[in-house]
Length: 615
Image (cartoon, rainbow, N blue to C red; front, side, top):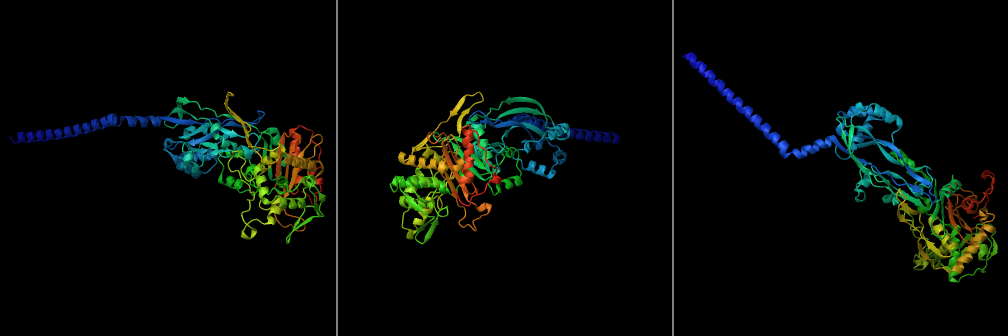
C-alpha cells in the first residue's frame, strides 16, 4: 500500500512539473507571438525601411559645370573626369584595420584617415570624402584590394580645369569645396558637405548659371558595401556655357608684356565697355583649388606679399600720379579758369606759402600752354591749374568720369578709390588746405583710383563723354546653343563735361605720344593718344635711388586710333619707375596685337639705360 502511494505521489509530482513546463512554454510562445506581431504589424514599415536603407544607397551625381569661352569661341575653362575616394563607416566591420590598409596604399597616416571619417557629417550610412583626384596608381591598387577594403569606394566626378593655368585667373576666379563656415550660413543651406561652387570672380558671380543640376543614382550594395547593381538613375543636367567679351589672344599678349612685374592691365572697347583683356600680376593657378588644398598651401598663397589672390584691376587702389592731370585740366577748362592758350612758366619749382613743390624735370620745362603741358606732364603747370580750378570742381569732374565709385562690373570686392570731398569749412577748422589741392592736382595726396576706374575714365574722354558700365559676359547658352541670356553695352550717363573741352584734352594726349613723355608707345601708321604717370609711394628719396619696393608706380593709359577709338588701355606697374619708360611699352604691345600690326624690334632690357628723371 505504501509503495502504491509512493508511486502515486511521484506521478502527481511529475504531472505538476509537466503543467509548469507547459505554462512556461506557452508563455514563451505567447511572448514570441506578441513580439512577432509587434515587429510585423507595429514596426513593420520602419524595419522594412531600415532594411532597404542598409541594402539600397542613394548616391548624388555631380553635374558638369558649364564651359567658359572667349569672344571668339576659344575654350578658357572646361571639365575633366576625376576619381574621388570615399569611406562609408556603416560598411566597415573594422575601421581601424581598413584605415591601416588604406593608409598603406595612399602612403599617408592612418590617424589622418580616421580623423576624416570621424569628422564626417550625417549618419553612418553617409559616405565621407577622404581624398579628391586620386591618381591611376591608387585607383588600380584600391580595385585590386577591394575585398580587404569594405566601405571604401571610388566615384567619378567632373573637375574644373583651366587649360591656361593662371591666365586671367583674377577675373575667372576658381571653384572649391564649400567650407564648414559657409555650410553654417543660410545662403548655403542647400549645399552638401564636399560640394563645390564658384568662390571668386566669374565662377562665383555666375555660379547659378554655370553649376547645373546634380543628378543621382540608387544602387544596391552587398554586405561589404560594394555596388552589386544599379536600381534607378536621374541624369545630371550640365550647367550653361558662358561666352565672354575677353579676347584670349590679347589676354596672352598682355600677360606676356607684364610678365615678371607686379601690377595690373585692363583693355576695354571705349564705346561699349566690353572688357577685352584683364591682367593682375602675379597670378595664381586656379587648378590647385580643384583638389583639396592643404593649410600650408593656403597660407603660402594668401601670405604672399605680392598678393596673387587679389584682383588688382578691381581691388588695387593706387595714387594715379600724372594721369590725374587730365581731370585737373578738364576741371579748369570747365570752370573757365584757363583756355588752351593759357601759359605758365616752369623753372622746376613752385612756392606756396612756406612750402616748395617740385617738377619732375630738374630746371623745369620753360613756358608752356595746355597742350604742351599735357604732352610733357609738367607738374608746375598743373599746380597752377589745380589752384585755379579749385578742389570742388576737380572733385566734380572726377566723379563725372567715374572715379570715387565702383565701376559696376558686378564682381565682389571692387574698391571705390578715394576722391577728395568738397571742402565744408576753412583749413583752421579741419577743412581743405591749398597745399592739398596742389598735390591732388597731380594725382598725389588724398587721391587713389583702381585700374578699372582709370580705363573707364580714359574711355569716356576718348569716346566724347559717354561713361559705360564695364561688362565681361556676352551671352549664356545651353550645350545645344539655346540662348538663355544675352548682354550688351549699358550707358551709365553722358558726362556733364563740355565735349569741346574733352576734345582739347584728347589733342594733348596725342601730343603725349607723338612728341612728349609717352614716345615709347608711338606706332608708325597708328594715331595713339596716351598719358604717362609716375606716382610716388614714399615721400623721401635718398641720393636719388630707392629700393625696389620704394620705387614709384608706373602708369600709362591710352586709346587708339585717336580719331575713332577701338580700344582703351590702362596699365599700372607697381614700383616700376617711370610710366613713360616702363608702362608705355606694355600698352604698345597690346595695341600692336589688337590691330595686328608688325611688332617693332626693341633693344634688350639689359641694354637700356634707366633715365634719371621722367614721368
